[in-house]
Length: 262
Image 1 (cartoon, one colour):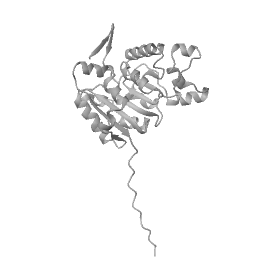
Image 2 (cartoon, one colour):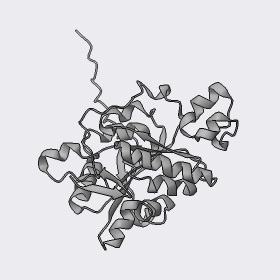
Image 3 (spheres, helix red, strand yellow):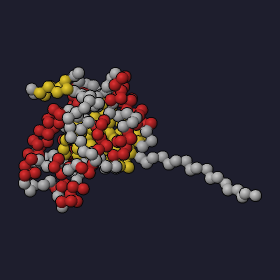
Image 4 (cartoon, helix red, strand yellow):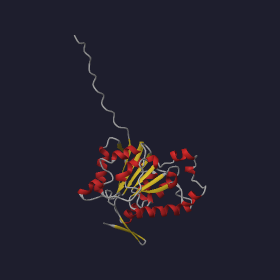
């Protein structure tokens, strides 16, 4: 297993999504208190509440929920970039590795101390087991998959974060017109992902010319830690974006002509 070294910390590059992890999981999306996740420790002790959360008590909890999600956020490079690109949105990064989550939390707290990143948070989550327990139907405007584990062995293809069965969960959480962003440096994985997304009736590919100037697309392909690494190594990046569309209407059933019984 490949490892990533950050300072004195040695962190696995990937994790097994089918292993049992010691993590508290909400039974349903409404059980999550997102307000706490968007406040720093100092803010929770005092009255300095971020602008996005300044609602009255009961309504505040109902209305405060993320509308942007980075699945497998790694060390948080994308969500930190999106914080400035989408200042009026609430952004969450989901990550399965506890050490990576701890690093992202440190980066967020450092940014908040500078008056930034008050609209982002990170949550330890095994997406392949518990994604549906975090989001309501149509809650998300955008969802990101940046340089996911390619799982090269055929026997591990079922672990790929984009696959036929899991696209239904992502489509459920995305609102109509919402966008699914993907990027990888592995061409075989790119072909796998696009083949599944192309075949799904609830996703429609956005032409490259239409999406290339999107600030979120630019952040995804240039601002993440992995994107910068690929550039340093002069590697290739393969990206595709899809819009959430309505389910195709079913063909109307043929009317059965009534006949008069003799």
